[in-house]
Image (tube, rainbow, N blue to C red; front, side):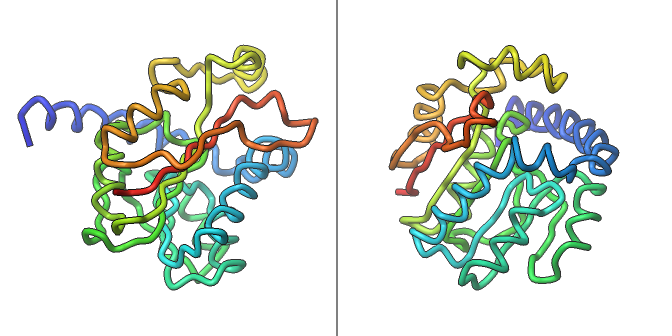
Length: 220
């Protein structure tokens, strides 16, 4: 690893620790029913359907938060092992209470403590903007087996509804941290993945203003 890359990763880990501390506090409100139903449930439904379709049995959920989706995958899908990865101790404390079927791990997306080519699928929902994206994608490529599935639900801050949603949620995310759909394709192909599909998340009418896009790729 080059000196410049090491410095960049150290800086990002510092940022991630700050974000993790914030979410340790936010975990108290994160499971609020309306928030989950409007913002998070549609991409979670997409992920469960996708993993079932691909027959993925060894799965990592990166940025798992309080583990709602992760626990659901372990319960509803025919899995061998499910890992829930998050940098926030507060989020993971709630996740551990939710399910004993998941292996919960406090790790950064950019440095996973799993062996090479050890999983069938890596997913992440509404968290990609927090990662050092090139480094995280390199890790995802490392731990995925050849032919393995990568699925990223990410905000598109260039979409029509991005500004209203940011005002509503109080978010102050930079477009620089949230790749456009085209930039996402460029990132994943540069990291050794082949695009399978990319489209807006299917949402009911009451949550369609949430500007997120699902990108699905296969590890070469």
